[in-house]
Each structure stands twice: as structure tokens, then as C-alpha cells.
Length: 403
View (cartoon, rainbow, N blue to C red):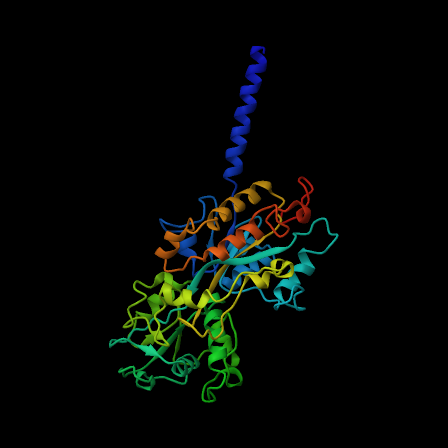
């Protein structure tokens, strides 16, 4: 081989290496739920890769950003590649979503058969398991709140601590709530909607005297105005709500486990039905639901997003926080980056790669059955519903998908 051919080969190899590095460093834009934000980005043990951004906006804004591909909601430009959300995509349990739902509007706008510019299907699946904890700021012994009392606290019917059965406390009671659309609010209100159905809450300002599933907490009430004894946390995120609860005596609120120093301290975080929001108590609830298995279930985003209304076991306000991604992307490097991360997070085997970090943030890793089912059915390109599957997404450079 001539020295010129050798030189050309060296240059070509170098350029391929540079291109590989560039692909590895392609920016992947995301955001959404505040509940798992520190786990995803911003702490020393965050699990998202360095080139993944994550804007903390709340689940509602995150879903809007993804479903309309509006990266301005994340103070970014370009494509929204993924989101985190504690709030499930609306659409009902069927494979064909109900008209007017989030999934239906997405499909009719961005996933129309025959449209060469369509984005393709979306995928929604659990990231980690979580509880909604009830922190409070009132000195006294360990507190266990009965369902009926929880209904009256969050409806606004209770305004003093002596009304809470067995609390051993007196003085004014004020509820702190999330002012923005939040999956944490959705998890809480889904539970309250079920357990409070037969409680007499007519003295409250709840719409029709009943709880309903709401991602924006104040929308529970007439005129979308919370009672005068309620305080809105001043900014997005669980940390803000937690700080607001402990800024003044007598306050109580709801927040994910990540910001709670000690989940077993019932003098600061209430027990419900006698259970603290610890891993073992929450796992007892979550492990009762198996992952999808039939072809229709595997293709249905709602089947990958189980919800818990009034569980019979364990700590009762529990659920998952989710990832939502596209099945198809026109950018091969983006597909590769997402698959590399998701393959790691949902690795095969008894122990998950990110389990230590997940637990350090107060969350609960998915069990092996869920983790491997997500990996084998939604992440691997060889499966029909998998990320970048060529039958669904086409073969590059004619791939359909998010731009």
C-alpha cells in the first residue's frame, strides 16, 4: 500500500472516530416531572447521561412539551426527545384511545398512517416506583392518619389539628399544595377520589362535594380556587413544597419521597393505615400488578402505566413515575443514545444497574419482571414495539419519527 493510501486510511479512521464521538455527545432534550428530578439530573448520583438535559417543569408541562414537540416549554430549542411524568397519558385502557384524549390527539396529529412526516407511536413505561408522602410540621408523637381524616384534611373540612383523630395536637392546620400541574397531585387525588367516595364532604368547597382525579390540585375546588386555609408552594418542585411545610408550624402537605430525610420518622411524615412510606411497604402494593403480556397489551401505552386507587396491601398512596419517549426518531444518534441509557436502566438480571441511586433518592427500583419486560419489549429494536424497530419506523435515511 502506498504512503498516500496509508495516510488516507489513517485520516478516514480519525474522521470516523471523531464522528463516533460527535454521535456519542449528541444533545438529548427532556424534562417534566419534578418528583424524580434529582435522580435524573442535578445530583452526584443522577442516572441520566451528561449529554441529556432535563428541565424541571412538572408533569403537565412536560406532557404538553412532548405531545406538541414544543421545546420552548423547556427553555430549549429543537426536538423534545423524552419526558419524565408522574401523570399518565390520558386515553383509557383500550388500544384505540378515547376521542379527545392526549393519546388520541397525538395520534391524529403526529401519527397518521401514510404520512411520511409522522412521528410514529409513543411509548410510556415506568421508570421507578414511588410513594406520595404526607409531611407535617406539628410537634408531637408519631402520627397515623385514618382515611376519613385524610379526606377531611385535603378537602378543607378540617382546619385545626384537634379534629384529626388521635393526633394529640391542637392549633390551626394549613394544607400546602402544588400550584402547577403535577403528577404527584394526580397520584394523591386518584387515591382520595376512591377512598373518600362515601365520605360526607358537603361542608367543603370540592366540586359536587367529591374528589376527582386532578393533576392541578386547586382544580378540585369550585372556581378552581383552593380554600383559604390552604397555601400554594411558591415554585415548581417537591423541594419547594417540603420547605413551605416546614416554614411555619401547623402545616401539612404531600410530596414524593426524594426530599424526605427519614421516611420512617412518623413525627414528621404521617403513617397511613399504620404504614410508613418505606420501600418494603410500597413494594407490597406495587408487586401485585404484572407487566403486559398479550400483543394488544404490549402495543398499548396505557397497559404499561398501571395506576393504584385503593390498594388492599401496604402503604396506600403509591405508583410509578414514567418515561415517555417516541418509538421512532429521524436522528440515528438520538435513537442510539436513548437505547444505550434505557438498556442500562432496564438491564437483565436480578439487580438493576441504577438500583443504588434509585434507593438513595427514596424511590424503589422496578422488580426484575417489570424491568426485563420493558427492556425486551420496548427498548430492543428487534421487537415490534421496540425503540427504532425498522418495520415500524422504516430504514434510514427514510426513517419516520420525531425530527
